[in-house]
Length: 261
Image (cartoon, rainbow, N blue to C red):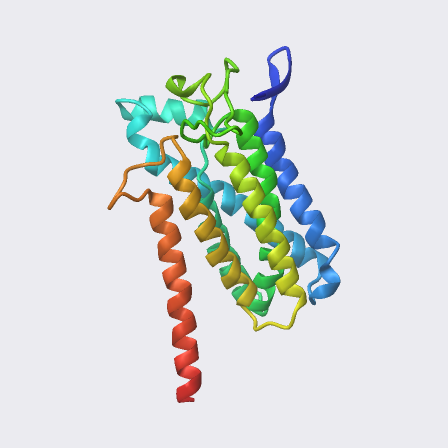
């Protein structure tokens, strides 16, 4: 693919970074054009966008470092140098999503905003931005899939691709594109759901369940290093399963509490 779009002297524009920036811009533009759907001033809106960006970046990088620490070198200094040198690569979306959601829930609570209603508004754009970001993964070669004989298998041959050497030049599941398609479908479903009458928090819950299911399935097709496994499941699958159980538990509790009330 094309890990680097172009290079001028020592400066090079990484496709992954460009698509990540584009993802935030498109998602922000989509939400900004729909501010009329929610009572939110522009300053608060951009504060939320900024917090989401910083928290997602920090959380996704931290989780990547935690999961990949043992693979980054033999000493602390080697691992630190590796982390700094390769900072623009190596992010785990679920780490960023969890950190961003928790940070925003705290901020919205502090600002006395209707938390669930506000969360419903913002979460609609999350799979849209995520889909664009995954195109960057595809161009860079990260988050690659297992070998496949399917006709849509993709071979990565670029000398700077992030695909592991043993998988270069052979057809692989384009797991990045699988996630692009799945996230776009989720985006349109959430957009449709948001326009319909719904309880506050319903769109957020639908996103958590929807993306968790997407990630749980796609993980079976991925071949890149994603941390250790427990019970045959990757950390991302365990996080996804926990998220679904948590949402289901809250839903059951609220339903039961409503009946008792």
